[in-house]
Length: 244
Image 1 (cartoon, helix red, strand yellow):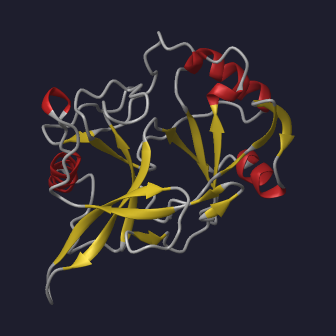
Image 2 (cartoon, one colour):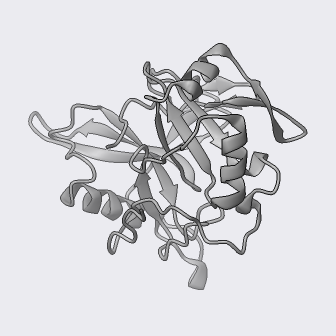
């Protein structure tokens, strides 16, 4: 159940923080409403890099997906495009986000460190379309869909993806919150090893909860495997399915 309306902008936290740790005080009234509304969708926050696929017209009747990674410090040059319109701001505090096109033939590194982010990622996207995880560009009702760029070459790779590059569709993995209180989430962070949770309000606005901002968080202990795994599409296969 992918949430296509996310535009890739910066998400605010549910709670305020002091010295990098949450305190039981909401950042704003919208965050309070989003968290306390039991109808609000809660999804898995995945360890990776925010990215997107954007529809590109090839001919009169044919479209294709092109891949873009998110970049900070947007300067409006030819390589960058602004984030699509949406509920999340492109500029937030010190951040100023844009999307940068990733060509299909992009290669990085040399020798044993050589990697193929362009080739592998486009094949992963094709596999997601072929298996029903993503709509085809010709049939999609959305002009863009945000995803998380994951794998051995991205961030900490805490979900232990076996490939250099893979994609996770934002909003696909639902997380159950048994009781929507600050104390419950703090206890959950001590017993559940995930990066965090993204909550999607009725108007599409998103707020995040990072588990490393609670005391004694399991996420901060690198020896623990992640508790919930997202569906990761790679150039070779689908690495994980839901673990419930």
